[in-house]
Length: 181
Image (tube, rainbow, N blue to C red):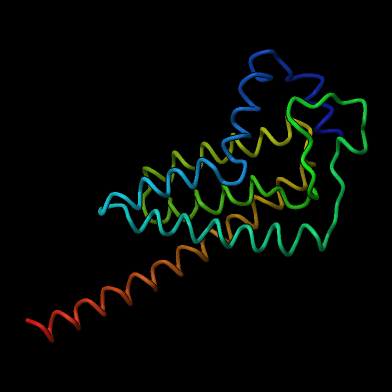
């Protein structure tokens, strides 16, 4: 709670009170990542990045929301310190790990492994989303850190899965080309 209270007492400002709920909303339900993935999928040159993003999101939901949150069942900081006025609607699921952070870093790492330029942009956004969860008092630092670590691992796993899938597709197409050419 010390980190959260430090943020509340020293970093709060009208500007951040306005911008961080918007940034956190971008990560809600993976909204920004789904939109970006659909755009990438629509562009043949970047289709693999989009597919990788979708795989990362699916794995994030399964690991974070389906398995870990109910298993650990940690209550959120605003439920402990009820004096805090939330700037967003109170989340109704459990706190650990931060799903926003987990999914954001899973996607960002998967993208970074494939494309450094887009991945760097995704990492900046993922970091802003992670910080927003602390600023908005909806996660403990350990929730965000746990989401970060798990997200990095999921992102790396996604990269290797996508790479293997892509190799199989390339091999299948080259085999078909030999048969039909």
